[in-house]
Amino acid sequence: MNETLKTIAERFSCRDFADTPLTDEQIKALSEAALAAPSAVNRQPWHISVISDKTLIEEMDAEALNVLQGEDKARYDRVMAGGGTIFYNAPCMLMVSSDGSKWAQMDCGILCQNVALAAHSLGLGSLICGMARIPLSGPRGDEFKKRMHFPDGYEFGIAVLVGRAKSGKEPHELDRNKLTII
Image 1: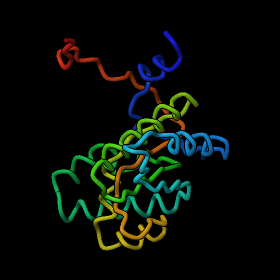
Image 2: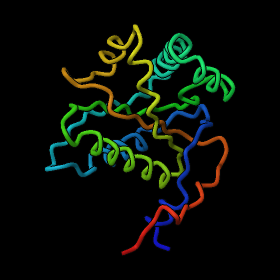
Image 3: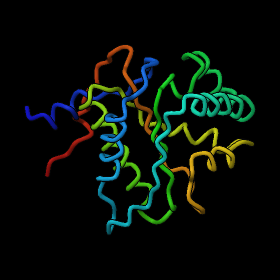
Image 4: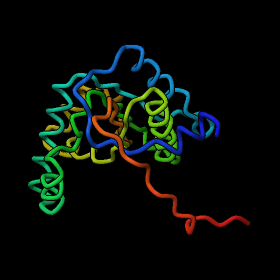
């Protein structure tokens, strides 16, 4: 199996990150993988904020829990039962904001897949994280957007958490019933 297919087959969603910060070289590689993502008509409807400021990540995690506790008690209880964190102690987050244009959601998803595969190829764990939206919807949302340098008019697109995985996990089983070859 070639290296790209092997990376795709072995990648898993990490929910248990070590405290180890990423190196500048790792951050550069992940950033370049993100910027290399294709987009509809090459519009690149995104802005990527690479966050390795652990304090900011922890503040957003705490805000997400506060928002969930007040708005979605069932989800809050599930998060608390699973360790009480949205960001799983990740030392780095690539927060992708979007201009909201017609194909932006798909394009931002492609960007995140590039990052997740690049992370795995570098020996890192990753988690594509839609729940990163939660702290941005709370009372401190505008503050966080400003601290992450969201361009004017941009909103949350998607995020990828990245770091050294504390433990491994088998990738999900392939469901061949989801496939039709014509």
